Amino acid sequence: MKEFLRTKGFKMTPQRELIFRSFFELGRHVSVDELYDKVRLQDNTVGYSTVWRNLKLICRVGLAEVVNIGDGITRYDRVTNIPHGHLYCLKCKELIEFNVEQIVGMLAHKTSDYNFTPENFKIEIQGYCENCRESEVEVVEETKSDA
Amino acid sequence: MKEFLRTKGFKMTPQRELIFRSFFELGRHVSVDELYDKVRLQDNTVGYSTVWRNLKLICRVGLAEVVNIGDGITRYDRVTNIPHGHLYCLKCKELIEFNVEQIVGMLAHKTSDYNFTPENFKIEIQGYCENCRESEVEVVEETKSDA
DNA sequence: ATGGATGCAAAGCCTTTGCAAGCTT
DNA sequence: AAGCTTGCAAAGGCTTTGCATCCAT
Image (cartoon, rainbow over all chains, first blue to last red; front, side, top):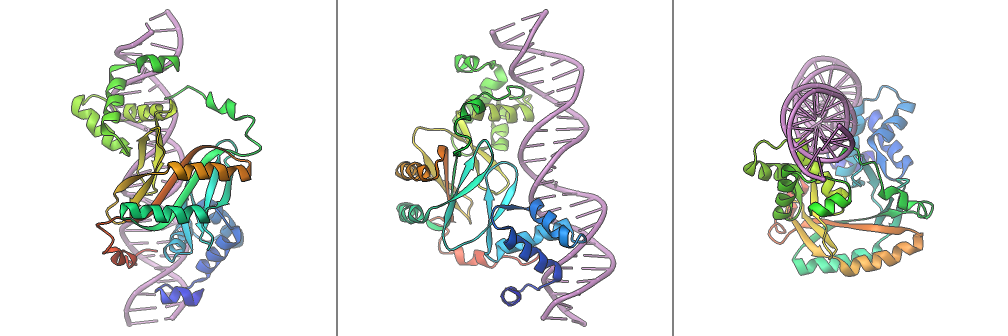
């Protein structure tokens, strides 16, 4: 990893190593705060912006990418060989991954109709997971307080 | 429209009418600022938060939905019968729509494997449009200033 | 008259940045 | 030594909210 970073012009530091390691240990859909908390457990001197900057670095070198489901929290997802989309439960806010290998293939083909060169695909389906399905009706009638 | 809103418990006001009309005139991928600017051209007394709140209302009653491409600008897209995805050019930031009717059908089918009940689909492909394709190489080597 | 709607200003929140000091190479 | 990194604090930028007032029903 150190070597990998150096070839890209970045240095390795103890903080960076801790942050990188923590990120990959956490796995998927990691938010800055989650990562920050985990990192601080092992070294409570690490600054928030350091975590934040390294998260961006991880993206920059292609090891993660942003997942933005629009709930105000930016998550970072490890890049894998198998493309996956996200099923986002509107009730319990759970994020489930699902394979989109075939779909991506078709999408890639489809973009050629538009003379578009795809770099990456983001597929997100909002709905209700198995457990929340029955109660989905309740959600429709939310508070009407502020428009 | 006035009737439609009333059935949902909302009132119609001059500002609201102007905002709604402006939104639908603007068409697709409208940001709060864009809408605000357009509205102010016709009535420079309308407040920013009024525009903002009404944009949320338009979403709430199901006439629009959020498009979040992660560039920090929340856009609102009119809901149509034909599902569409977005091709986002990483260079010129252009947002191109494309039909995803078939894709959505397949995705809907696929979610059943996960016992997931889909409500809406968001498909976004980042890449380079026809015009920016040649120069995409330049983009890779950005400034290395801050991680 | 009642309760939603509006405007303004002020908070909130998460994301970025400026800078001086510290480390890695 | 040179330049990337770090921490802290402060600034940004967009989103929300409090509140008194106004208006639609």
